[in-house]
Image (cartoon, rainbow, N blue to C red; front, side, top):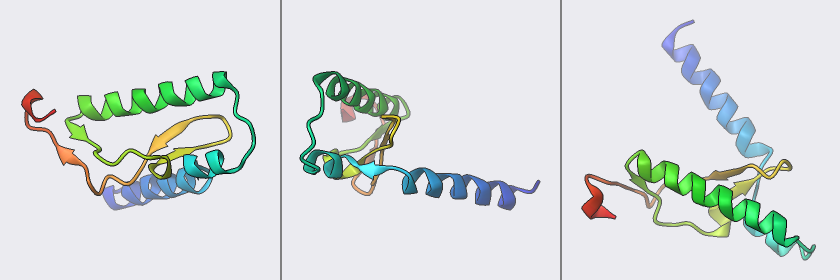
Length: 93
């Protein structure tokens, strides 16, 4: 398998992940009650994702419910890194 084919497969997988996830803002605006336990899990997953980004040297800088995707399993993905910044050192935090 060539590099181009691998990139196509990875891109396709990313598109599928995004298609089966909804922005957290939609979940919040659905007017259905969300239990405290679910809120804690979502918050924990968001913080884990942001910690991962920081360890990779990336600061998101635009975290909001519209930029957090969640699927039916409660898995969280952070999206829209357009305002992100590459960190050069811990001073950039």
